[in-house]
Image (tube, rainbow, N blue to C red; front, side, top):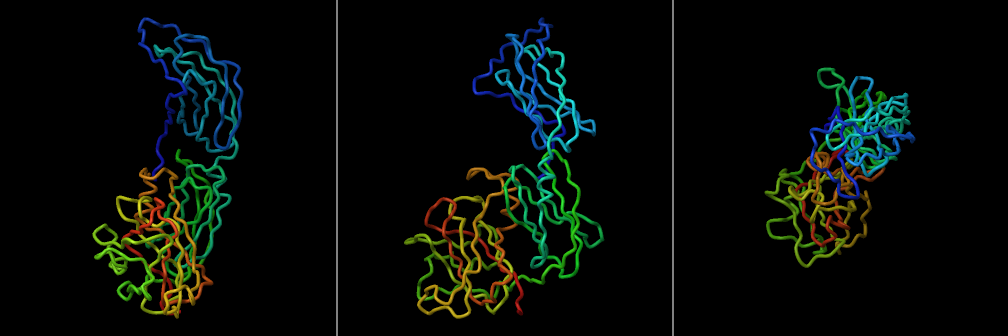
Length: 387
């Protein structure tokens, strides 16, 4: 997600309808200024409460401050509100905030100037709690975003030309989570971690040196469905398990269960050889991201000697996973961050202590509509094919 907007302007709104009225061009009388301001300093922000002037044609209050780069950031609020929040501060220094009363003829009052001193900005709070660790094929980063701020967490490393550049960016409002950079060589590597907010403010960069653990994409052409004793969920003709391994992430081919079905349900497949798995990635049905029959809560099971009765005897639980929508928006509303994450696929990390296995059982506990069908387009496996 790109963070833009050097001038941030809030919309005018209130719990009651704003009476805009007709501009009187002959009105040159500015309203009285707001008064009796009180400041509550917040993380990267300041809430200013004030007394409104008595002018009957008052339309809105505008609050603003100037960044150290000379950019004016302003927020407007309705004449029915007695407080305003200024956001986007990059540090904890003292700033002058200016509040103006504006009437229906766009006459502007004299400013009320108040001092604000925001607390530590959210992007710095997030950066302070980043934890990096070696992972299969790259680096894992766990984060805590206690305030739930809209931030971008960036992983940097050297590219093939030796330039220290971003290799992975996660845009999120989630309060906790983990993500990583993958497909990197298994050599000692210098990484950088930084956090950006939606106003373009950047944290300092934390540097770590780690060695990614070797992994490779497993050969999908060796994978095939394995419905043991008919216990797997039934699927529509032309929507068999094998279509998850055809390399096509579009809606042209897909896996789709059919009646009679219920939750939980699963399908089983043969990897083709015993492998030490590092991660499983699945791709949602396009046009229905975070919706409909795409899996949401799943379990991944592994075995080297599946019971012939189709039960879970001789199976070990490798991972439990719930898909989290990056934006937190309701279903059918997807942000750029949601779409970017969907295009990359949903990753389930397999713990490093998990045993090497040949057979996988993908068990769905819940889809995105709490229904009974499962439908998605592709699945890939990563790990060490020669453990």
